[in-house]
Image 1 (cartoon, one colour):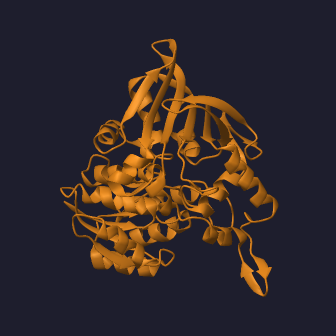
Image 2 (image 1 turned 180 degrees about the vertical axis):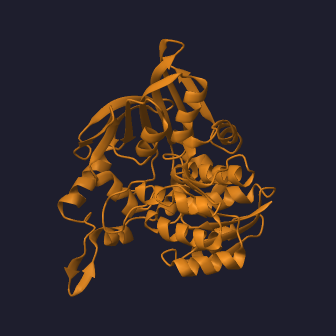
Length: 392
């Protein structure tokens, strides 16, 4: 039995809290903390067991450390903004607490993300006999585990990985994002990038696309993007020759996004408005629907998986492993939509495996560095069942 502190009370934070509360034999005491205490209280009111809540500024390391010292958690689950990863990791080092997150660090003033900033913490966590687990959501997270599972059970060598992500749901709004609008739009408008033959190849944003037939959904147009799990998989899957990430978007969504870009609303640099410095993307975020508000009326399904090619016993093999998640079912269970659900459930599972001692290490790690079997088993048990097909 362990004490866990969850930082972030958005859609994903709500799912993590709900799911941790359902496993009291592991998560005996839960503290949910956020800058906005009202969000924590709303989540607490949905639960059938008591938890603690607190207000905290995740940009303030000393404030975080003080709360950690007061509550004494064994593990911090960070589902706040990616800008805050390093301050939370610093607080964990100061207080001797293990760390887990779902998305890698991004500097606030530059639309760039990579693992180096967090990988550089490895020796500091190791020296304090602490563990930090990075990217334990769905993509990154489950997609990395899918690759580790494939390598362990179905391949002698993996040559190519294509991560495919489709949200075929309908939330009823003309334009909205499924997670934090600021982070989502920064990610989508960035240049595409993929790994091939030891090199990183860049593309113009959304310039490369193809049609893919998703199970239970059908054909959808998907677009090549850069996503952080490409970086860790290129490092941790031996001999891989190419890794790409693809995500589907409707033409309506892309048209809205193109217009917003053309008029400057996706800029992340401050502009002067009547004597006040305003960041256009932050202002746009304030106008768009809160992603957690989409859940009640969301319909349809998501499909996220990995198409993997390689060799087994001297023969070429092609394999597809994936999950289907239903928005309406997620809302009925935890008052969330599927995007939050598919991120929050893996975070709870990773935390559970760390606290149970099934995944342990000293330093900073990505999920594919551990045994995939207990994680894959837990996915089936906790609401994200997976399916596999051999395509050769």
